[in-house]
Length: 513
Image (cartoon, rainbow, N blue to C red; front, top):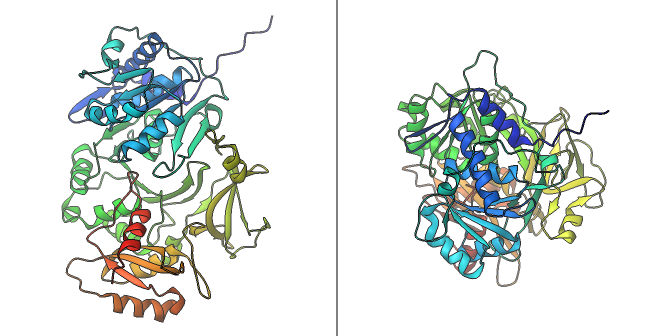
């Protein structure tokens, strides 16, 4: 008689298996708390039983509103064990945007960090949910941790199915209908243990950015690899440097603007960062000049990852490629990963040869299932098995992929178009410029003009005229910004990307000089 089919196992099972292998190992650190792998694994299973006791079933959406708490990570795993899709809200979205997302994903249970109780009350006032659960005692809702404490640690597994959605991640939500990206358990894949060296000590990952973004996925991989995740509540460059030294951090992930802040911090040159083995950056365009600064500061430990929530990982620029003797290579996003296909296509869908600019199209086993309840948009982006990323780029003769811009960010001007990242790279190459953001703003005649916001180096007095002259000399009048503003720092989104939408709206109201 044939054996019965084995129950489906997901990436969460892989993480929990790894935790169970070394139960006394320090798995998570947060605000002085040090949680062992065994205690964290037990918490996940207790939370899964507690959620089932509240009536949560496979396919019902759980939404998280939380800071970087170990309990929030455990709640995500617990919900996934039940086959529930999880949506983790960005904390810095407006209450109206968060409410729209809570309604849109048909939230069955909202799990709230008590620190966000006031915001949760605002959200649920317009988007009521059947179950309001808190990660600790509060004045309202049901304390999920108290419920979990009374539950068994008996493992929960096999309730999810490969085709079930495990995560709904939103790339928008600030205006209009939020765009939720659905990933199934099958497409999320499994997490085999992948230590970065046979004799290397287990990795210690610092997470100073929201678990709702890429940091959450990186935490998954580190725990599966038997590592330790050190959680900070928010990004502060001084606190990050102190944590690297204190906790002997080996791995760090930052978006480029945050990496620049780390490099520029006055304590950077007197902090012991020798424990760092890998500093991954990605999520938005990086400045080659500033990445070169980071190499000089931290050594040969940088690695760039290019990908999208819709597509998963696409390409990697390895540490060996971060060569100061080959500065041109730092403009690249690296080589396409072995299990990913990339085609560069024109607006008619024709493949373009190496060196020619076109839309980056991707095919792999990690492409999203689609956008939540937006079949028309899904059909527009997913065509004939290929994901159309909306990014403009090109492949060179050696197979390196270079990003040029987002199609929607490209500025159409008289005589052609300006790719914002190319102009940012040029501005950032000026010795008195730390960072810049380039964006288009339409004037009263609806003509798009090139605008730039520039962060000067400390003590610099470089003016708009000098920067315009450099651009005109190096790239021609078409690229010359019509307006340049100066700021102490660029505004960032909750994920840590330059908030060009905010800059555009401000420039539309009042033109800088």
